[in-house]
Amino acid sequence: MNAKTSSIPDPLDRHLSANSHDDVPGVAAYVERGAALVTPEAIAALLRLRKPLHKKIAALKESGHLQHRLEMLATYFEEAATDGHKSTPAHCEAAFALLYFLKGFDRIPDSVPEVGLLDDAMIVQVVLQHHATTLRGHWLRRGRTWPAEF
Image (tube, rainbow, N blue to C red):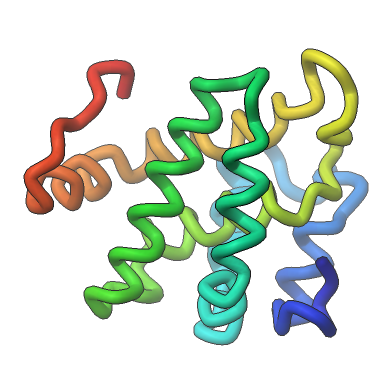
């Protein structure tokens, strides 16, 4: 995935591709800065990338916990977009986490056995912690049971 083929705006694409996050202290700040770069164009691009996103999530056989969390974020992202709740902080952070996972150019390459998805998991965890109330409310309004592990 690159900015030209996915229509991800260049500043967001550069932030996603950064080899070093030294200019941003901590994972939470990295996520917040990335979410601030999520534009309506990036949201539209991610909506167009649903199929490869779900395929990559489904391929996560070694990490069922991360797989479940990514599925929840993807469901929230898609439903909130359909409901017209685009560009909210929760939606932008969910989009950023999903793009980070989908892009696959991480500080820890996904292909590294046992630890390759650690950075993805950390980003997803930050988003879930930042927006637990919003996500839980969304889930409950849809008549779903909120998972106890959150």
